[in-house]
Image (cartoon, rainbow, N blue to C red; front, side):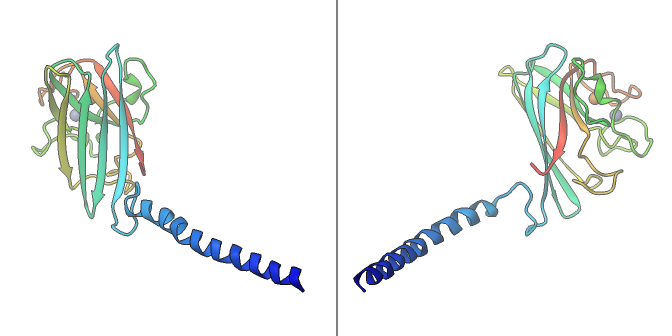
Length: 193
Ligand SMILES: [Cu+2]
Ligand SMILES: [Zn+2]
């Protein structure tokens, strides 16, 4: 009888212990859902390219894509780059394996247009433009596009493309490259990060 009474007490104690422990667990699980990589509640879709140095450059950087509705916002930040003006494009192959970045192929151009300057037709869908890198090796640029998607129709989808940084500036005229020189940085655009 006494043993049974103790067991009941122990069971009740365990029960209340669990009851106390459970809510914090639930909160811990719930909290990260407020800002996940891809948020189904807000409809946002995210993609990320981590840019690594190519052709002997020690450049690092990242490109963050966020789709809200029909608009994709891109933010690119570079570090450890050589000071000056550098062209940046989306190239059609999500392959940065080659030491010179050539594995990324040509500019992403699903509409078969001429190379040019973003927003001034004609231009490639991958013609992001130029970024200025300061004496501190840092540079950044941003762009909002209505003709891109994150994971949408193939002719709009930025994922599995490559963000390529060039040694020189894009002249927005020379076909089909903008005469931007070698490839000093490359990063594959990956969805959901
Ligand atoms: Cu390029
Ligand atoms: Zn182009």
